Image 1 (cartoon, rainbow, N blue to C red):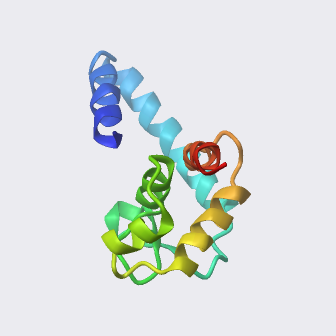
Image 2 (tube, rainbow, N blue to C red; image 1 turned 90 degrees about the vertical axis):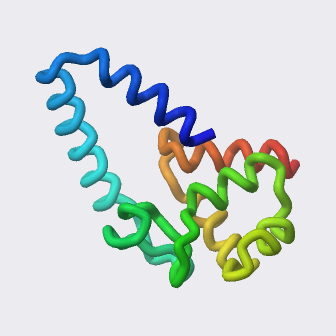
Length: 122
C-alpha cells in the first residue's frame, strides 16, 4: 500500500515546476525537522538512525519500521501473526509501538494507521 501512495505522490510531484518542487522539498525538510524535535523517542523499543531504513522510526535492534508494524496491525494481522512474520519482534516491542502511536499528534500519518488498528481490534 505504501509504495502505491509513493507512486501517486511522485506522479503529482512530477507535474510541478522546478521552483514548486524546491518549495515542497524545503517545506518537507522543515516539517521533518520539527517532527524530529517534537517526537518523544524515550520509548525503550523505538529508535531512529539515518543509516537504518533511511531514518525511519524502527524497532530498536532491528530493521523493522514502526510504520510496517502499524500497517500490519491496521490490516488485521494479530500481534502473534506479526511476531511469527518477524521473529526478531517481541510482544513488548509491539506494545511499545502502540504506546508510541497513541502519543502522536492526530495529524501524524502513523497516528492514522494506529486509529485504523483501533477500529479493527475493537
